[in-house]
Length: 371
Image: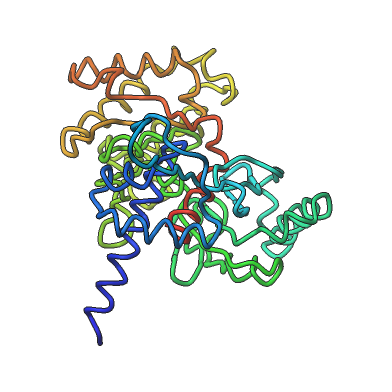
């Protein structure tokens, strides 16, 4: 085995990723700026940019007018060609399934929503997804030619190598070869990711993770989702999952959780659990959140304990139950009652909240297949 060759290939991929990450978070940049920001040599950046220009992944966009206006050569600016390709994103949540086609910026060119309850008949469900994508292609035939692949994100455990949903809690109990089924039906290559980790990828590429390297991403509704970002990468434990905040034990001999244990946080603050106390509309949780102050406090206390161990730069809140500012402010108040450091400067609302239904699989495809 040529380990040297393997290591060189890994370094090359990492260098290309550094360049793309920087360009993704800047509207344009010169090669000199990219080299200074990434720590790569000017020669390496020039070679990488030339490769990307040949691919059409980036394009030149004028010169740097701020450079010396007399002597010296003006620096040519480059930017990501957002129209280079389209990506299919499929996000399968407990209640709804979202199907989109976007460009590299996540701008949506086609979208549809299905009821996930239809997934009991797996073959028919996959066919419904494929039909919605085929309908988009009929409206815009040119779009199909620019699709480079797709990603499906889903609740529960997944096997990335095999493209399989291992256990989609509340949807399927058995393994489902989602990528293979979608590829056979649509003719494009698909990858798979857990939905929470997919959204964390979006935070890395488009959101807070592009600014801070250590971030804890939290999603509330219908359950509690969590991902840990360390050094701009999603941290995983030995078994592929590491941030099961919803399955922290918070009550001795509590109710049995769907994970098999008793007293998990999910059994206290999931939508299903809270509706046993009082029925409410998830979309209008702000109207009733004061009735669930104990649950918000329990969530805050659990999070503060977690942050005391991880010490992330920032915590990012997402999910429908965090959509309203008043709910978030009350949550932060509870966090501060335990530790004043965890205030509104460290606990932020996701800037991607308005795209959280679909942006995860798009970002994951970009992260794994382009970066």
